[in-house]
Image (tube, rainbow, N blue to C red; front, side):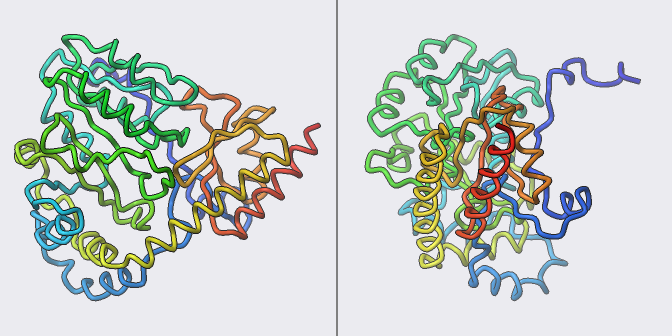
Length: 364
């Protein structure tokens, strides 16, 4: 039976998501469970998005607007771009797939880093392409090393900024220099899924570069906007790139409820700013607690923090799971003694810290 499969399918390791709350409740037999594993918005969904979804329920028997016309125009106005600069997808994952199918020819390769969003590697392999993954340097993208590994086979370079799972970022000077030095026949894709949570002055202004560079910027409504369950992300690029990608995009790929909800949250700056401020404030509080506990952590520009444990990371996650707290082990990333925790509501973060202290004390 196995000979029926594509020959290189064994090269692909399936993506391992954070466990859903209801699954943990069933498996562990406990009612109170908090999820701090998948970098979701702990404050839920904008009231405007909920209202838009409710109003749109009677439309779901119709196919959605394949062009995302109203959403595209709303976003274009907000970003001060033309609608021709925007492409929507069923989450950023679908857009990564569209990019690979649009730009790579047979024999060409994807270039990215190790210890980054694993979908770059998975989707490249799923489409039959090779990938070259360069080690991080001090948990950051090593842009010089990536540049030095560009060869005639390199076609698409993926950069997660801020990076998942480390939370680190490359700054304006570093990225601008990199873009300038990379050959113009190589495509640079900057994935900014977590850019809403940044609080540094030197974070790159990538949107301003799209019309003059070989650049695509990815963003999502899954994180700060709280629409992870509706699966909607977007790409921003020059109109030539967008037009080519539209040929690959599946028809009706973004459902009606996702379109209506996304359009609504774009008009809810109050919800976004509240989320952003609370996440940044809670991030600093967790840093303080880690310092008190002498826990090594990596400063983050995202809504999660990667930290080091004296015990095996997977073992720690299992211990927390027994207490009804879901965080993310990083074994899939090759980090045995690191784990990643999503920043939750204040009470969730306090419970996590309290439980973590207890587990680590018992382990000594």
